[in-house]
Length: 313
Image (cartoon, rainbow, N blue to C red; front, side):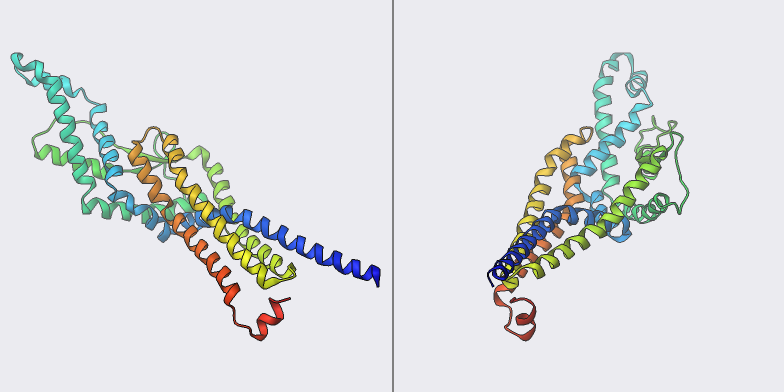
């Protein structure tokens, strides 16, 4: 009788300890699981990918940065100040630097007008819908590479450049007519295709595996506990807390993102970060709410046969 009593106590202790160990592991996995699930869903799903990135073409800071970069491309392959100086009479040649600055501002403003137009927004959305399946097919081995002379897979903004050249020409600015400008955004170098394939496979597998493992661990923790209904309350609180931690990490991550993208204007980089992480923040909030619902439900669940049988042991 004495040994049986201690054996029963030991089993209760081990079950309780196992329940808490499983729960702690599951809760530590929550932020990572949410991130990988979000990455998988955003990267592999074209509709979600387009929904995530389409606001880029409407953000004033990002468009401002793009228009400045676009206008800079116009002046990289031409001595604008020299051409203006040649066109001026001798007594007015000293105005060449000032007029060059004015011209740069004018080109930047015209490019901003083009990039904020509905036509560009429609083109941007269409490009995303067209390019995303091709990129995924390339990374999954079901498509062919389209690369430039430097071996890079790129997004081409030549249509916007062509429109800007025509606009400038129509307004009397003809010095850019004979220069070739093809601003492109490099997605990745073709030589690193295997590297990006492995990353995509990694995200694809973990985006499903981690959430499933986390859910199984929580279920195992609940059924290992001695007082399941009371334990369910702490499951909900844990999910709420760790999802809130993830939201906080996302918020403070903006400053690090801005530092990493040093070549981009700080406000544009910050706006880009907010756009990219908006759906992740919403997901973390939804999971926090689900944790709160679980915690509250554990206190107000109806006293029916199922509850008595499975959750009150």
